[in-house]
Length: 78
Image (cartoon, rainbow, N blue to C red; front, side, top):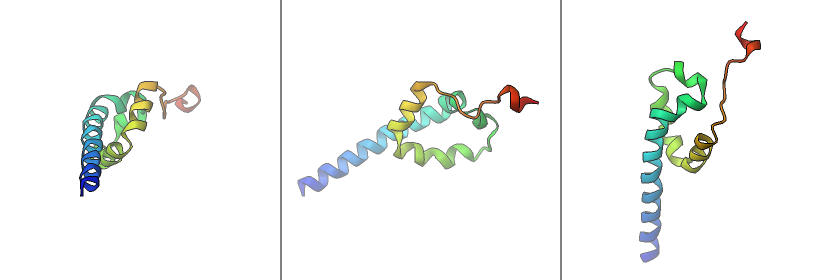
């Protein structure tokens, strides 16, 4: 029973940290790395929230790297 409790506590901690990071990322970070998020539907952020919670370590790495995606290039601007 102790092992099961430890697993549940570890999952709860994972999801708690993930939820905090997802909220911060979707409020402040997603527009910085993804230009397409600026004009996205109001439902975009709630739809990707759970994904961000699940893979929060990858979200943090991507956010901190500062690599931008979906940027408009000079070729695409014409």
